[in-house]
Image (cartoon, rainbow, N blue to C red; front, side, top):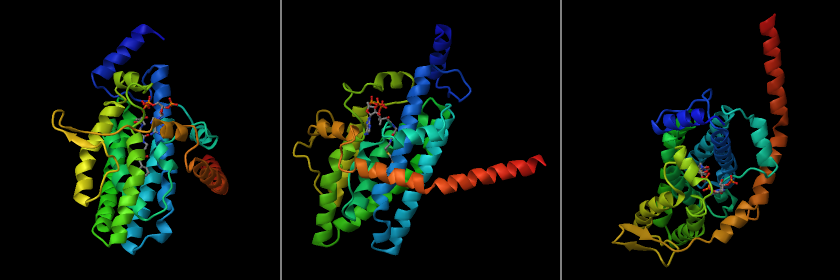
Length: 311
Ligand code: FAQ
């Protein structure tokens, strides 16, 4: 690639100018964005499944309405993000194909099961909480379409996080059994939520380049640390215990110190060997196959309208 073009590109990024779809950009920048935005889109779509499991069994109408709205929002985020990825010259079919063939990644967190209603609270509180921590800085990403998509997505995630925390609060203040359910959900979701931020900074292959391109603004470990700092007091308010015997406040650094993450578990999930990896992909494949007639009908309708317009 032309070094003058590269230099000018980096100057624009450094000056906080937004890069737009028709602007010149290095191949690596384009590839990285397609990878990250499509992984993010797939995460939203696959992320509908663990919570979707509880829509028909929500305990009250109010809870059902909130959960239905949340899962619909996630579908909307996925479509929004696929559109942002398409501005980089890839087709949606290609991206969906990569997901269904198992080639594309999506967030590790969605490969865990949701056996209890309290999991819905824990997902909203912890998974959306982690998502917000990671995604608010993405509103300032150098690539315009992704940054703008993130603004609306973050507002909706914030509602999701609150409904989750409020659900956890109701359980934590409820009967002994309800409190036990809430604690059990926290025990199962805590460590996977910390893994959402990705490998440690030493292991993170893409971080330094992504930060130079201002796609990422903070490193994986930095965001993870902020998440722990924000979440520990929330757990205390709930009267629940974070399942980490090494967790303690370090007055010297002003941050919580926490135990070691089980990276073997994380890597196994990335390889497709998590508790629900196969089930999740099967559900997406079935949805794709079952939806074929809708895509066919929409294509036929569009062709008809085009023909009518030509007459
Ligand atoms: N799971 O070098 P890095 C949501 C991969 S929130 C799976 O650090 P990077 C909302 C990574 O892709 C979840 N794979 O990479 C919601 C790379 O693989 P590759 C989605 C992971 O890109 C809530 C390799 O490891 N959010 O959906 C994970 O600089 C509730 C090396 O890693 C986003 O996608 C992981 N946890 O940093 C929905 C946010 N972590 O391609 C429903 C946007 C890392 O080399 C219900 N993405 N990998 O084979 C990002 O900010 C970044 O891509 C990171 C990773 C931070 C995830």
